[in-house]
Length: 309
Ligand code: NAP
Image 1 (cartoon, helix red, strand yellow):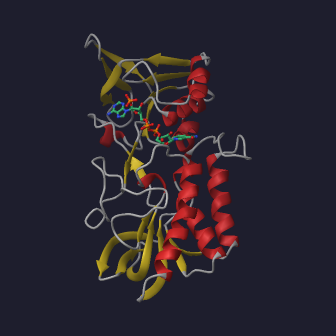
Image 2 (cartoon, rainbow, N blue to C red):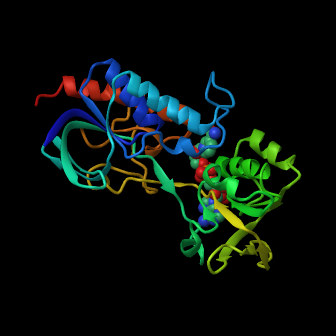
Image 3 (cartoon, rainbow, N blue to C red):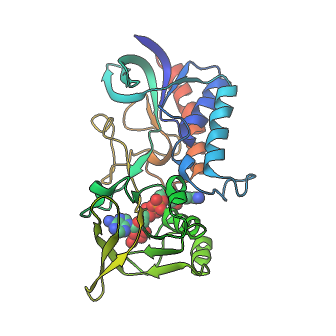
């Protein structure tokens, strides 16, 4: 069984930044992810990371990964299947797709991020991968001159709608309210784009189609009327859910599942630090995730130095 001082779980902006900081401090750290880069790899465009205007998410995620590698970070290409605590040691069960193994760690920086929230409507599961997508930057290219719908009102949904508007003929943006969580700049850009049509106060009821998406049935929240839109694809962008099932037995989470931790990443479980989208915070962005990664290394280093064993 391998041993390390810090196991970094998750290779997004938070985990990769932690790996860079740990490598610079010459700490014994291992980053575990089957495909380092994180959620940002799926963002069409990132225009709020200082100094790198208009960079694609893929380029930014890859630059983080390369930076960590150049600093000498140690990567294990695996998923973490399970974490348990044995006294003061964390035992991680890793699965690389072929076999499982165990890694013992004196501390964990938990930066596992979030999963896409599902729409939860009829037809969604059956048609995922056949016209239902959760990643516009991955799948937009399949819809040249087609008609697509995006569901959601946050930064992801509006960014996806703008990306799709450059490829598809018509983009319906379906949102359950008439105000958006997305930044004012994105809302303005969407409103100025001719081939994006807003359908507000509306929720999806069903995604239609046998083997591929052919339509989406909607309900207006104000008057309860229903309509069936003919579309070729639907992009669900209704937010994220924290991936905390593995640690929720021994770390305190809030009522929505996020690990309760401040900027220092310190959680209710000594030795386990939370970084990135997984932790309770106001603003979930690449820059705040990267800051968390740096802060967690500082906290982990202090914990390891002041702890015996
Ligand atoms: P989000 O901000 O949580 O927005 C989710 C949207 O989906 C909301 O508009 C919500 O409506 C709607 N929604 C939720 N459940 C729904 C349901 N069951 N049916 C219909 N609509 C539903 O999620 P996100 O856009 O994925 O963003 C996640 C985080 O990443 C945010 O913190 C965001 O700022 C960040 N992000 C940042 C960037 C960037 O900085 N470049 C890009 C993308 C994402 P309500 O508004 O009515 O609740």
